[in-house]
Structures are given as C-alpha cells and as structure tokens.
Image (cartoon, rainbow, N blue to C red; front, side, top):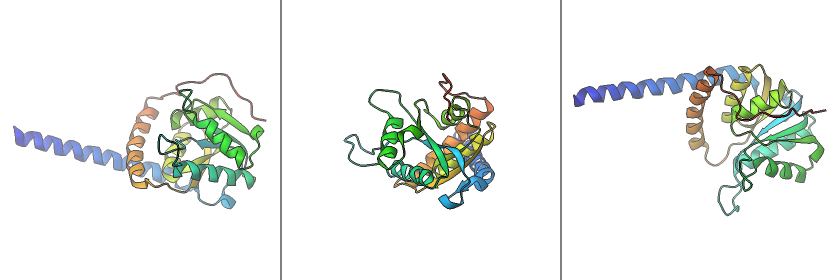
Length: 211
C-alpha cells in the first residue's frame, strides 16, 4: 500500500512538472516576437499600460522595490522618446492605505510626465484585469505593456487571446529574480485556467475616453 502511494505521488509530481513546463514553453514561444528591450526599437502606441507592483519592500517604506523603480524608469523613457502619448497606471487600490496607481502617477509626474497624460486604473488587481480593463474601459485594442520580461510574457499571452494587439517594453529585473520566476511559472498555469474559463475582470464600470 505504501509503495503504491509512493508511485501515485511520483506520477502526480511528474504530471505537475510537465504541465508547468509545457505552459511555460507555450507562453515564451508565442510572445517572444513582441518583447522589446530597447526604447528606440519598439513600435509607437498611443497608450502605455504600466502594470503595478508594491513600491516598497518593507513596511517602514524605506526600501524601494527594484521592480517598481525599473517599471517607472521604462515608462518615463517610453514617454520621453515619444513611443507612447499616454500612460495608464494600473494596479491595486483596494484599501485607503494601499494605492499603487497613485504612487506610480506621482513618481511619473516627478520625472516630467504631464499629469494630464496619465490615467488611473484603480481596479487592476491582476494582470488579467489590467488587460481587459485597458481594452473594455479605456477602449484600447493596441497598446504597450510595461513590466519585467517574465511578467510581460504572461501579459502578452493574455492580450493575444483577448483580441488585443500588444507589445511590451522589458524593464530591468529586481533583486528577487529567481523567486519571482518560480512564482511566475505557477501564475501562468493559473492564467491558462482563467482563459479556459473565460474569467472576467473583477470590476468594470464607466468607460474612459483617452483623446
């Protein structure tokens, strides 16, 4: 009995590893032509979608998250190079004490991006939500995604399967690359399930017109 259970467990582990590997390979293969690492070579879009993450690594707000800073740098570079005209800051604003879009907006403005060219998406709780809301609330079927490579690959895959024509600028990686990469692989499996089930954004609401 014990031996049989061990074999069953081994088979399950092999199946899980195979599933994760297959999904990861599919995402990488499909999106590799949509990733850009140089602002000068990326096509122009009217809108850049800046995907949110926590600004600080500690509760005392002393250590800035390297992933966050790199995304801000990339967004500013895109705007200053004329590769996007507007930026949607999309992130979690679930409580009065945690507001990713507001922090991103303030940091972009401090770097020279006009506040009138920045739009809030306060319900970008997940990458899927951000992509769907950019399409359905902000009316964009072609835009530039701004995040790290591993995150962009998943975001692009979602966009490709939601009738969105997107490219992505890949900002520098942060300090926790390997742990983030492992977590990302599991997130991709969840993404596939969401796509199969036609999962929708948590909130929609009134449409926003971008000039």
